[in-house]
Length: 141
Image (cartoon, rainbow, N blue to C red; front, side):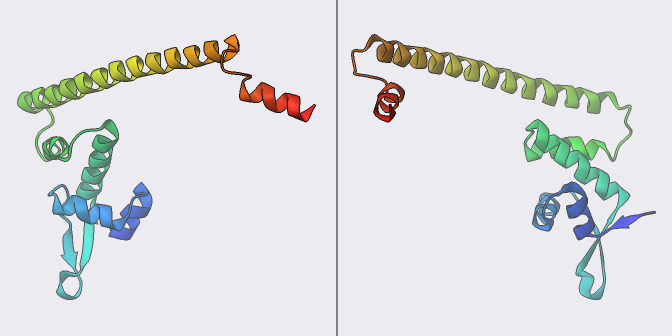
């Protein structure tokens, strides 16, 4: 069975060893200890998979507690209806949050477009002098 050092996992997943230790502190990873006084962490394939699932959850924007609940499913049978139901609930909550964020972003972008259009209209009307680009073009001529 393959094992990994913290440095190997950090390099493979392009994260810092400190991040891996943080996930360990949060109970997401439980490496075995080796060497004098148990100073060296030894990660089995199970821990590598748990780290991969944790990072995937972070990319999805899940909280650490949500990730922990989902990662703990990895240790149980995969055909468990309660686990799948929990996963669906987490995904539904996250989808709702992302949909709200998307709506907020669309409203904000529409407001920015309206402000840009108004500024361009005012500059084009000549009420405020020449636009900066036109003035600098005349100076250079």
